[in-house]
Image 1: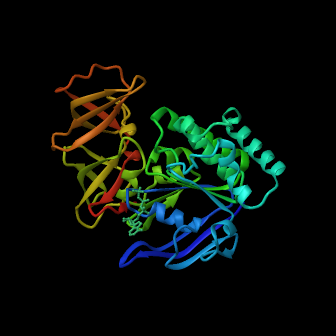
Image 2: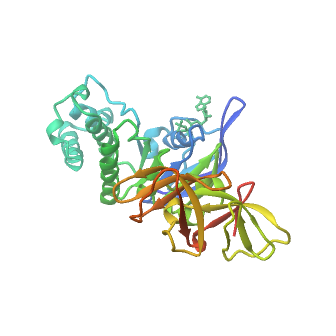
Image 3: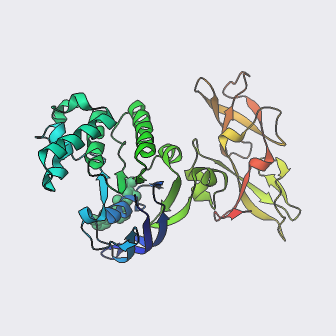
Length: 354
Ligand code: ATP
């Protein structure tokens, strides 16, 4: 197990700064997930920790030791790649044992390690097959097996589930969570899927354009985001941001006409704001101390719940979860109540007003 520390890390490709002065501390045995939109630098950061990418400036420490220039092997890390990176001509057994053979381990020990990894991942029956004879999910297990046998202090996962279909993604996600619980190693995981981040992480690191926007527990990021970007990135469907104004008396007026207070101290003069309300925080027709009128456009019925995709009379689009059994017909206008204490307030430039 190991603690990973990043101090003022910079990465430049020519004149382009992919990572800018990044600081992060990853606890021993924790599960940390890097999320963010495409190109924000998640993989670059992971690859620098792995030793696959040179660090331009700053310090990387693993268990207190500076590792900037250490070989990947010396770092005690193992990486699982999105495309599995299996050797096609080798059997599963040979693929999993490869790094141990390279390290000069004896056959009996290799066999024991491979058997233990295969048992952990429940792929014992596949050991004599070649990668081409495996499903995507089985290949991903073999790729994880290759990492496990090295008994690394830090596991690095680079979007390991993105080539799997939706159902398999969910079951592999659970497998990875179980694996973490069982072996307790530090795990760092890159994804752009916020559901994966929410369900796997002890700590989520939300990145944008080479910088950390916010890092914290899934619950903290969901309930208490620092800005618009994090609030919009965490949660599915995405949080609604409704235009309005915050008055000197702390009263919030939405452009669609709704008026409520949310325990915010008033400003010296009225200011434009964006009011964040998550779709799942609408509580029903007549519940809550706020309500908006929504013109229904599309109803997405998920069985246990429904999402209304609609518009407000201000013309803004809105997504509302509706758990009622009322009839919802496209074209009609319905009332959706919400508790004002669940709303979040942002300035128009995206910073949270607390
Ligand atoms: P994705 O989710 O699409 O994989 P990411 O967040 O992992 O994105 P990175 O792959 O880390 O993003 O890339 C970060 C930025 O650095 C991008 O703008 C990318 O174009 C740039 N970049 C990455 N590798 C190189 C390279 N070898 N040369 C030049 N620019 C690069």
